[in-house]
Amino acid sequence: MKKILITGGAGFIGSHVVRLFVNKYPNYMIYNLDALTYAGNLENLKAIEQQENYTFIKGDITDELFVESLFQEHRFDGVIHLAAESHVDRSILDPLAFAKTNILGTMVLLNSFKKLWKDNWEGKLFYHVSTDEVYGSLRETGLFTETTSYDPNSPYSASKASSDHFVRAYGETYGMPYVISNCSNNYGSYQFPEKLIPLFINNIINNKALPVYGDGNYTRDWLFVEDHAMAIDLVFHEGKNHETYNIGGFNEWKNIDLVTLLCQQMDEKLNRKKGTSAALITYVKDRPGHDLRYAIDATKINKELGWKPSVTFEEGLSETIDWYLKNKEWTNRITSGAYEKYYEQQYQ
Ligand code: NAD
Ligand code: TYD
Image 1 (spheres, rainbow, N blue to C red):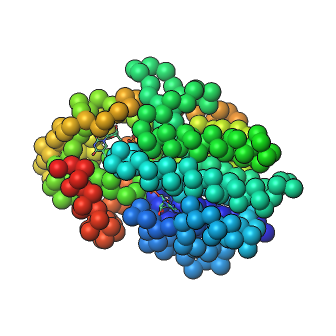
Image 2: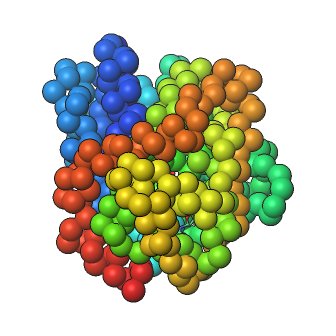
């Protein structure tokens, strides 16, 4: 029986990964380590919390003594590391929090894993889940490949880039088996409504302004979160040691085009007059250091591991909107208190 530690499993992507692994691999023991920050929510895991092969552990990955004793106690064979501070706008407001969790937290995990297995790495794996934002910004053309140089622009992407480097360094220096994946923007159910898509869905439901940064001509490559979780499963089991895999949807959208599509789908689903949601679009001050364009070349994971996205963007977006409409209480519960304060600070 394999013992696998998933960090950040109460967050957006992590909860999809935990659900997938707990259901698909009854022979694995899945441990979910999460500090339950504003972004972590155990409600996301209701569907599997009673399963015998699942254990939740509340704790902070930056707490060296705690993490080390956890590794000594459970002797995890594999780590899938997703815990992070993940929102660019918050990293601009509080960069140190990002350095602490994303850099120091990753190092604490790496160090505990090394202490445990350094004399025999056989059958062990550290899987670091990262982002395409480490590559910086593309101009109008070109795609990020696995060999694109790192060139991060935000405190978030700089902290993720740094953590990627430490993972590589532990592989080179201590022979630690690792894989890294760098994924494009995810969307889907259980995403905290601070990122573009869930924020705008929530604002449309509540007839609030849709704050589009700058001229809205920034481009992102969007991937349905369940497709990312399936890619993580494949990379964990079949990825080659010491390799990086780029994961993306071949699905580029300019923000304003995406928002327009979202508004159309929302009008239909809410039975509102055509154009009602689009009337909420408000151009606001740009994000400092705003990356113009991200786009992933996912050829390697497609050719080597046979992965490709399973849904079109229109299907994935429609499913996502339906989920948020059905789960308004989920959003209402997490958007009170601290969220309101953040919202005021960010968008006043
Ligand atoms: P999220 O913010 O929704 O969730 C992060 C989780 O980590 C939360 O449950 C939070 O409680 C937990 N966490 C934060 N600090 C912690 C700490 N110190 N100790 C323990 N747990 C802590 O993030 P997400 O969007 O699900 O992203 C997950 C991972 O995937 C991150 O590493 C992120 O960089 C990466 N990623 C995200 C995207 C995206 O579009 N969201 C794209 C590519 C890569
Ligand atoms: P976001 O979801 O924060 O992801 P990332 O910054 O990691 O790509 O933002 C996606 C795009 O949407 C990005 O170009 C910034 C833009 N955006 C807005 O225009 N308004 C908003 O309120 C937010 C949160 C994002």
